[in-house]
Image 1: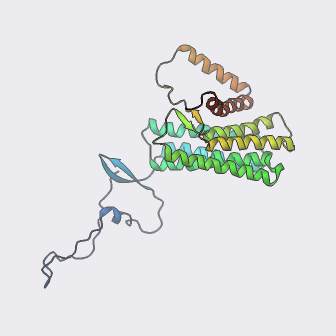
Image 2: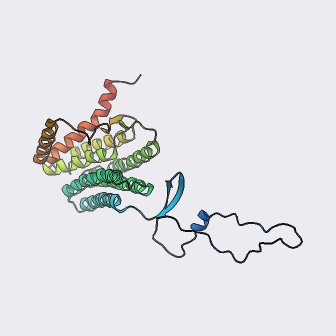
Image 3: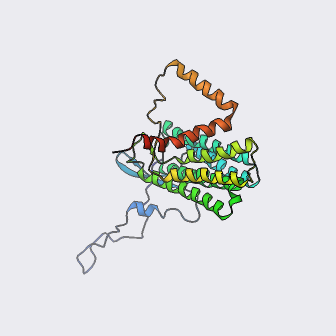
Length: 291
């Protein structure tokens, strides 16, 4: 959709010479872009976004539907996790966060595959991540066990949520200069999986989450995930993997085996995977210190 002419009439204009001055009347210097901002009157529900086309910035209305549907699914799952946790359904809350991770992993890929990337989509995705992987895991952990620690418990939950927001903000400003092979700090979805996996596993084995010992362990895990998110520890992004090229046949067998193992005991296997990934950053840093 191309922008329509946004010029407006400003009343009759004298094109001749102003009597007694010898000069032409002053021209209206406001450009079409500024006029366009005032085209719509009254309450509207519209997004106008600037895009570069042919080396020239143009303004387009509307948003891309398909990738933003996946982002909305991720946001809904995160919100549902909060609601489920407040009702004491901790297993459903933890699973909802993992489902949110699936939606979050698909929205960007769908946008790139369909060439529907947009600044609106990037901002919407970041805000959705802040809720699904920041606020939701913090509140789920607090409702599950951290509340037993009183003020310390909600402080740990808040620190986690704040660190997730800071991690996302840092990622947004460094996205053009960061090494694509690594993440700086633990990614917020992985941190959320570490916290939600702990709740899912604890609920599955019917652990006494009202115990002070369990609350302390939950606080340590949550605080560890929070600190790793805002740290400068590098984590492998696995973006160098070629998912479109040919691979040896045995790779398919490994994937099938991995799916089978996860399906037999998803809460334990998934939590172990993300725990190992969260520990891999600091372990690699100590094993291979930078000069």
